[in-house]
Image (cartoon, rainbow, N blue to C red):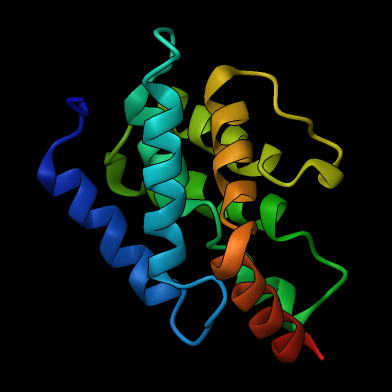
Length: 150
């Protein structure tokens, strides 16, 4: 499956995520890669999926976690959506319409946030993220997260 995204765009997002997620054992870069892998497997069955939007959303979906750890009243999905939009549009790296679709996916990846997933990319990210909570890896991640938030 060919992703319509340049290597430079991918690396730019990956570097940003690496910087933002440092110190979070349950939502680290390995979690992001597993979510991305899950999403790409699901996307194979969805011909209307915009893979460029999906890949960007998968990479950036947890960038609001640190703010939620500092203030549990915040929703990391809402904070992350705003941060992703700002990151993607800074210096005109990506068009605003693209950034809005990515932000929508991130906002909807946490259903209890009040923004249920509607677009195909949003639904795929939601499912891919939830799949990473299943099985042995999911149990280990859950224990890390519980320990982290007390």
